[in-house]
Length: 314
Image (cartoon, rainbow, N blue to C red):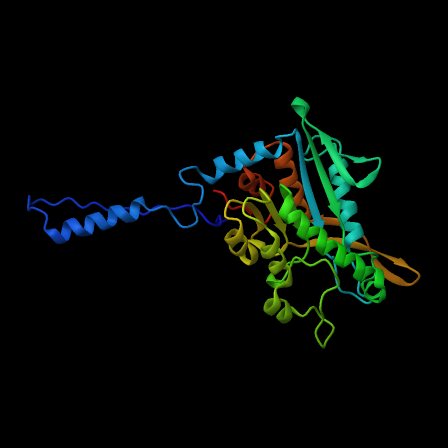
């Protein structure tokens, strides 16, 4: 996989000449120009001489400055089509939590819910440290058609948007797991549809509501870590995000991120039952595990687990 925003320098090719001819003024000027270019910092290298991997490790340490690292995980609206059209938030959350609750042996594991808030999952770490994953889901039910008719869904989508905006500007680690909307996401509500009842990707490409929300609310230096576990998110979002927050450590997907689920029939209606595999969720879990272990070698981990995800700090 190609890492995004790879830091590079200019290479100077030195050719030896058999003759001892003195350099001309033009040669000297050309050499000075080459040296000047070599000494220039790459436009994407806002961290000076420190490598992105080193900077990532520094950010990891800062996440635990008060001994508690908080990850805000926003689950986008999981529309998945069908007749009737369904939303998969509930089974995606169940799959995620099941993995986080798992008996240790495969990271991440050993998380437990806060007795006062089941959406806050935490795990105690060595040296008195702790990691907390705060989960926010978008769909009110697993029926997309019913959610569209329910005024409470519109209210909840508005709340999700506002919570996401606030968190972007004030929190250290923010992850999004959902649809990219072909560059128009993140998206926390039922998608805009075209005349045929399909997601209107042309509208999302033109208006980019989710990306604009990020750019308007993300600040330089906040968050320290941002993860977008949605289809082709490195291609869609990394460059625009780094324009507003050049120092952010960004995790994203390098291809379409699929998941598979089984169905159940309730009152003659076919609904999603459980997830059997999810590249997006598994990549999210690996990133959470990386934060829990305070390690930045995400690319190696993702590749070893054959996930479609990588970080852009190498």
